[in-house]
Amino acid sequence: MRALLDQQPDIAVIGYSTGTDSEAAAADSAPDVTVVVAPALTIEDKRELTALAALTKVIHITKAENASRSIEILRLGVRAVLAPDTSADELIHVLRTVSAGSAMVIPEAARRSLDHLPQRPASALAASVVPSLTPRETEVIALLTQGKSNAEIAEKLSVSTATVRSHVHHLLRKLGVGSRAQAVAVAYETGLMAAIEQNSKGSDRS
Image 1 (cartoon, rainbow, N blue to C red):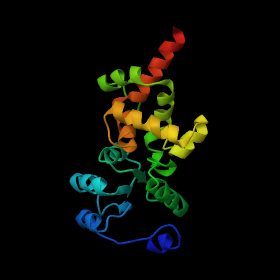
Image 2 (cartoon, one colour):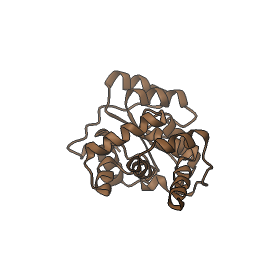
Image 3 (cartoon, one colour):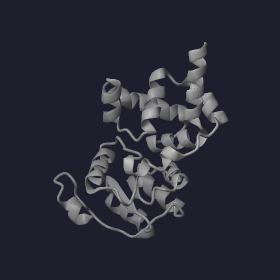
Image 4 (cartoon, rainbow, N blue to C red):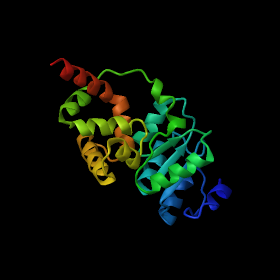
């Protein structure tokens, strides 16, 4: 991986660490982004991953066929989940996107398993949040769950990236989470998208 990253003029590798040493290394060197590869740190290492995510933007490379595990990882504050077979170009793209602060939460390679999750019934949280969402916020959360970056959402909705950032900020506040990754996790876990769809059908009938 280092040979690949060293070829990029805008990426500098400042260190390596293993397993539970990652937190101390991040605190010492303050990297902008940390790439975590399982099994060095796995979902079982929740305390370590949570602490690491508080210090740096974390990209976790792990098996993505387990959808529930992917969601758990996002809940810990990890910015992006990638499958082990992610291409070099995709990894570089995600590194740059996460570094810029516009996390590509679940790129295509890692999102395949999430697309097959059963549609969960809306929880009390989802039912209470949906009425507070504006039509544009509804569109934005749907695109976030597809792993879209701010730039991609802006292009899709024909608005500025600053407008998208504002919508994402409002969504995080309404969902009571600290990152877009956690917003995606909440959307999957609580049945938020099912509640949005149900609300939309109800509006169409009225």
